[in-house]
Amino acid sequence: MSSPTIIRPYRPADAPAVMDLWSRAVRRAHPFIEGEGTGERARTVREVYLAQADNWVAVAEDEGEGGGEGRRDGDGTVLGLLGLLGSEIGGLFVAPEAQGRGIGAQLLEHAASLHGALTLEVFARNTAARAFYAHLGFTERARRTDEATGETLLALDRPAPLRSVGWLHVRDGRLLSVRTRGNDTFYLPGGKYEPGETAPEALSRELSEELGLTVPAADLTEAFVVHATAHGANAGRRLHMTCFTGGPQDIAPVPGREIAEYAWFDRHEARERCAPAHMKVVNRLIAQGRMAA
Image (cartoon, rainbow, N blue to C red; front, side):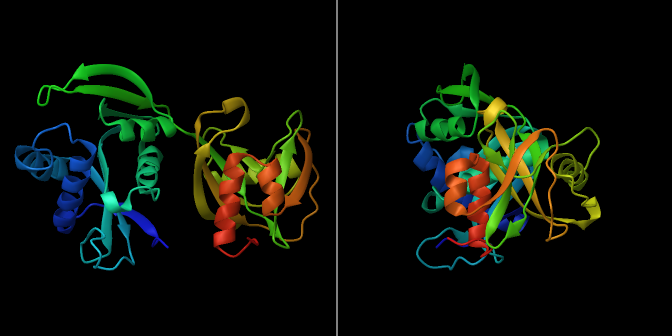
């Protein structure tokens, strides 16, 4: 089982671990570039990008030192690097042995939480990276030839994700869900922000409008954030949903004019009747022991 991964700012002490994972990751991703991961390209990363970019690392706190699993920085095992130049992703690298565990997506969504819309460049012959970015909603904007390598670079863009809030109300192991009129899919109670609202304020308003519940913003506590693909009218857009607990446990919802019905679903019912982001929420709650597997 993989250890929990956190994202924190890069520190100078991370340099040996970061340079090691970068070198191994780019050699795997760019076998078509002679000397990749070494020499002048390594010096540029170490002396320019690590010094000037806004860098973040993904760290597995409980990884051991054996088995070739990354390099340790004295505060966990560094498994990924994100380098930002404003809203441009200058580099996103994951240690080869840690790829496929969602670390790259976690780093990318962290960038989106900081800057919203994102841009980046990727080598045309790096098919794995192109598939990864396409899966996460990036589209090609332009192409150019990289002067240093002669390779084709693709410029990719992704719009800012939709930001929403959701309420986690679990009763007897079942999650409260709502269905809007004219829609056959259930969602978490909640919705989008109004201009100037904080996340708790947005959710407090939505709970009043959707279910007639009075839940002060101060009573809401952020639980986690889910990143998924939006459903319905915004299908295909990336979704950044901040989920909250709090408020009364014993409730008698009164559906507002936009809500056709509400229900409490277990895992199996949620899979059949709820939006994709909803299932990610259910999986998180199962992992926390709040819903049955």
